[in-house]
Length: 445
Image (tube, rainbow, N blue to C red; front, side):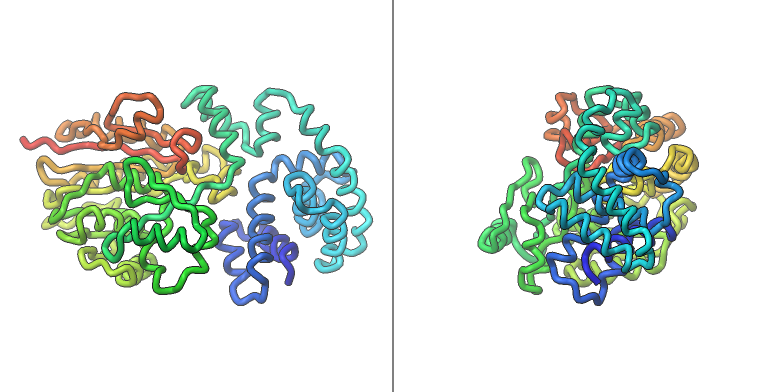
């Protein structure tokens, strides 16, 4: 199997099974004999085609006599991969992209359509630049140019304004930056940074998060000795700011009610010096087992993993016993589109039931908080219905809680805003995933 065949196969499985592209590609490549370079190419093609599907289909519909929706499934994906290379991969010679696409038709049993594939891609090569330059500055034009459905373009404009919309759309084209969290329970930031830089990795310390490093190229970390694997873990800076906002202290009792896969749990444990007690819960048994193993592997002793449904009332003996409770709820994930590009093609109605579930989880988590304790709500989405609206509904229904200013001053400063009990992190402002955080404190009386 070569890289292009792997990409086409994965794309077909995404369409047939509806799964996430990264998971399906990992399953496909597991045990394959592809080189590192071919694996990287397969990943680039899969993610790129998924990200640019609306743009690619527009170009194919303009240059083909057969509409994309009526094409043979394999031919459709072969054309998308070929068109992506022609339009977005300057280092791939056009003749090579077309030649490989034609060859793929035989691989996937549709060789009789090789001439069709050849002709369409040659038209894409000739016409793509002109077709894209002629797109109007309307929502339809933006949808095609950035491959983002108009529903989200309008929703983001309504929620955040035109300037933020343009920033979001522009940054969706970029690969997400790679951040790691240093495991300060087994090493120091200075020591790890020296090791990484000796291996050719550029490391930049994040202002306000001294144990967070922006690394480039991230791929170089996979060549490090295996014994260094537990000295760090990948964690977007938004998640690291979320843990900083919680401000956990040594010796406290903390709950992370939707903990898997556990990155935030471990970062909180580091802030606490691996002292006190962190109870990490998740609904699914297999995720709890994976989290337990991850905690063991990274050497934390203060974390206890429990399987439980965070939307249900906690045990009576648990109520009012935690200094801090982190509630990072299931969400639509629109803040991590760069990592899971297929999310963008979902519609608002697909997420209609989420706010009610999120509020339910938040209200049950609130029962765990002791007087004077902290409750924190967060999502990795850019959708006000799941963010500020849920936080406002919670405060309105629970006068025993008051807003708590979030101690993440650099994040507020980056957007020229005064500190508040809530903040939305944006890729184009904070260099992070899209993320929302809200803080509350329980009254002492």
